[in-house]
Length: 213
Image 1 (cartoon, rainbow, N blue to C red):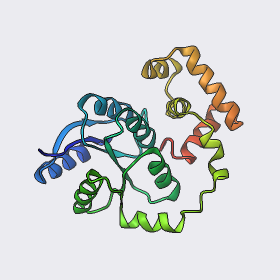
Image 2 (image 1 turned 180 degrees about the vertical axis):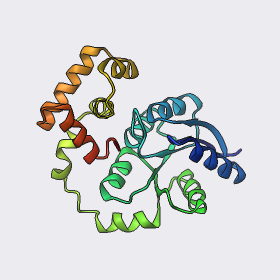
Image 3 (image 1 turned 45 degrees about the vertical axis):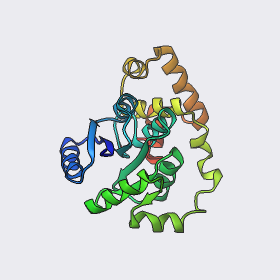
C-alpha cells in the first residue's frame, strides 16, 4: 500500500509540482491545503502517513500547524519546508514535533529520502540544515526563548492572525471563539511581551518567525 501524503503550501504551482513528482515515485497524495489551519483539519480528516508543510503559511504557520497535527494525530510524520536554514526555525520545528526539516532548494531526491526516513521513524535534516543544528545545539539557551515560550499555543494562533492584519471578528470566526475572547488573548499577549501596540506585536511575530509578513 502506497504511503499517503498531504501537501500544504500557499503556492498552488508548488503543490501541483510536488504532487506530480511524489505520485511518480509511488506515493499517494490524499490532499492539499493552502494554509496551516486547513492542513491540520485535513490531516485530522484523511489521516495520512505524512504531512509536508511550508514553514511560512497564512492563518496558522507551519510550526504551529505541526504542533497541532502532532497533538491531534501523533502517528502522522511531519516534514517542514523552509527557504532558510536559521537555527531558531529549525529548533522550533523540531520542538513542535517535526520529523524532518528540508530546504526548499533541495533536490527532489532529497524529499524522497526524507519521506522514506521519517516513515521509518527516523529524523531527516537537509545537509544544509544538519550542520546548523550541530554548530548551534547550545546556542539557544532557555532564557533566549523565555518570552516566546510564555505564550500559549492559542495565543500564538491569535498573534499570527493579528499580525496578518485580520479583523477581530474574522479571528474569532477562524478560531471558533468569541470576539471578547480574542480581545482577552490579545491583551494577555501584549502584557506578557510588554508591548503596547499592534505594530509592536507584528514586529515581534515577524522576528520570531510566527509570520513572514
